[in-house]
Structure formats: structure tokens, C-alpha cells
Image 1 (cartoon, protein in one colour):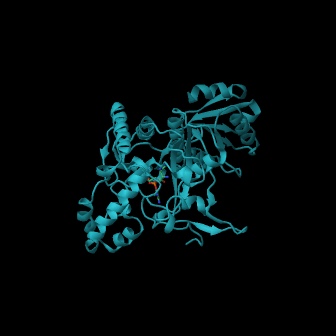
Image 2: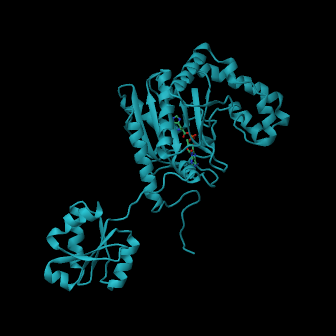
Image 3: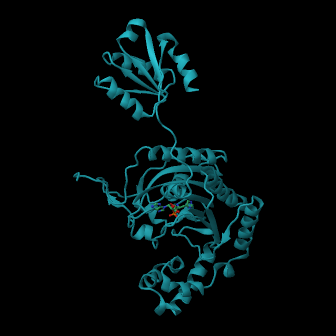
Length: 416
Ligand code: HAM
């Protein structure tokens, strides 16, 4: 056993999987940049206070934060998500609205590691600030759904809900607190504890004994303001106009406290696992203000890269892209010819690799095979004397001599 291994909940992402991650990020970038979202790279750690704005009653803040004091005595934390950082950046830079940004990168939560749940996990996401229009809610949701289609996913379900505005949310929270307190003796110990911190989150319990009581709980839609109800109706009709199907789930409250009005979640029905939520988001009107900025509405989503790729595996789509080199150079003379030719090939737009340490031709050909290259270029003393190269299309059992000066043109033809 090696002395050092990755820490629990973290992984090394190796080839060919790592190429799939990059391709995932590229497909995402293309999807959201087609809608005017610009790339933002927020820092991976911030002052703890930034993340406390996610809601001091959320588990992400109370139990899962990687926070520490740095050498300057600042209390900082690794980001558990990126919405708070984007809003902090908005307040710091005061960009023109609407401000539409996308991001991609790791986040950190001290959770119990298991399949699909990690302590360091990647998300891609978008945030749009400064627009209250219901069409934006639908656009944001449509972009996530367009991205899933671009990956080839077919078994993704969208659940949607509204939490009403800040006042509605608070009134609903009080209503739930009353309702659950009445049934407290039948709730699980975990839900009883949640009830004292955040009654809304009791709705999220997946524990069997809680289900009957949750089923009888009042729904927020019965008590939200007309304005919030109208906004929700407009979002649903904008989704209908784009033929995006959804299920209204009035138990969908989400795990972070900043949500107001529209909330939504994407679930993979192909995943047979504890964690099938592959993405989620919603409106967070009020978060910018909580971070010291002007009243600004905001909406966005984040999609779990790790979990979405598990969903891709389950559906057999979005395979790792090919990253093998085009050409493998075999030099049986002294290694300098492979050294020169590889450099020339790379400078002329071909990808090329070689063997080192002047190994036997047999060993070098084995490496050529393993490299996945489509062509081997072989240089021995005859080729050096005649200014030629032996070209062998891999797996063909054939080879032929090409003049050194024609090699790039010949390769273009062979690799077409
Ligand atoms: P979230 O629901 O906490 O929302 O995370 C979004 C997605 O990240 C989840 O649906 C899941 O796929 C993935 N995820 C979360 N935790 C883990 C984990 N421990 N391991 C693997 N994947 C995980 C947010 O983070 C919000 N910032 C989304 C948002 C953006 N809302 C508005 N704008």
C-alpha cells in the first residue's frame, strides 16, 4: 500500500476520464455563450462571511464548510458553491445589468462521501443578475435543458416550484413551523432537530416515518402573494412555449436559504443511486442586498459535473473523446531524428509522440501500438542515408518509403 492516498471524498481524474471532463466544460461553454453568458473565474476561497449569507440555518454552512484562519488571522472558507461569490463580485465590480456569467470549477463541502457525493466536486453554472422578467427564468431553465440534450441525455426530469417572495417565504416558514410542531411527536429525531433550525427543510426529508406528515403539510402555493403567483404562471407559460416539460413539485425547497420565487431541480431517472439530483437552481432576489449591494434580482443554476457524468454512463452517452496522438515516431539510430521530427510535426499541426532511451525497434513499435497513433514513422540508418522515412499505417500490415520533404503532405492524405 502506498503511504499517501487521496483524502476521503476527493479523487484523481485520470485519462481518458479527464478528457471527458474537459469536453463537458467545452459543451457547456458553447451552450451558454450562445446566450450571451460570459466566463467568470471567482476565487476558490472567500471571507467566511460571504458564505454565511447562504443562510446560517443551512447544513452547507453549519456542518459542511471547510473554514480556517489564514496566517493573517482572516477567517476564510473554501467555496461550497459559487452563487455567493458571483454576487459578491457583482457588488464589488458593479457591472452593467443584465449581468450574465457562467462558471466551472470545484467546490468543497464536508459531506459523507459516497457514489455521486464528494467533498470536492465540480459544477458548471450560470447566474444572471439585474433582471426580474419571467422570460429569464424560462431561458435559464431552457439552457440547462439544452445542455443536457447536447450531452445526449434523454432521461432528465425537471421539477419546479415557487417559494414566493421574501415575505411569503417567511410566512410559509411560520405556517410550517406551526404544522410540524403539532405533529412533532411523529417526526424523526433528525427532522425534529431540523424543525428548530429551519422548518422549510423538513419538507426535504427522505426518511420514511416523516413522509405521511410531510404529505399533509400546507403547500406554499396556497399562501403566496398575487405577484409571486403571476410570476410563476408566466414562467410556466414561457416554458410551455418552448415545449419544455416539467412537474410542479410544491415540496421542492432546495438546500440553500437564499432562494425566492422560482426554484427548480433536474433529476436523472437513469440513475439508480441515492443522489439523482444532477442540477438545480432558482431565484435568489435579496442575496446581493445581503452582501451589501443594491436590491438586485438574480437567478441561476449549477449542474454537478460528477453526477451528470454518472447519468451519462447510465444512459451510455457522451463517451470520452479521442485524445490519442496522430503519429508515433520510431527512431532506431540515436534518438535525435525522433527528437527533430516530433518537433517539426508538432510545429506543423500534427500531434506526435515518440519512445525514449533508445529502446529496441520491437519495444518502440509496442509503444506506438499502445499510443493509439494512426501512423508510425520509422527512421533507421537507411532512411537517414536516403533522406526518407518509412510510413506505416498502424494495423494495416503495410509500410512504404516517403521522401523526407514530402512527409507532411503524405501525412495529410493518410490522416484525412
Ligand atoms: P446545489 O443544489 O447545492 O445548488 O448544487 C447543485 C448541484 O451540484 C447538485 O444538483 C449536484 O448535482 C451537485 N452537487 C452538490 N453537492 C455535491 C456533492 N457533494 N458531490 C457531488 N455533486 C454535488 C447550488 O450549489 C447552487 N449554487 C445552485 C444555484 C446557482 N442556484 C442559483 N444559482
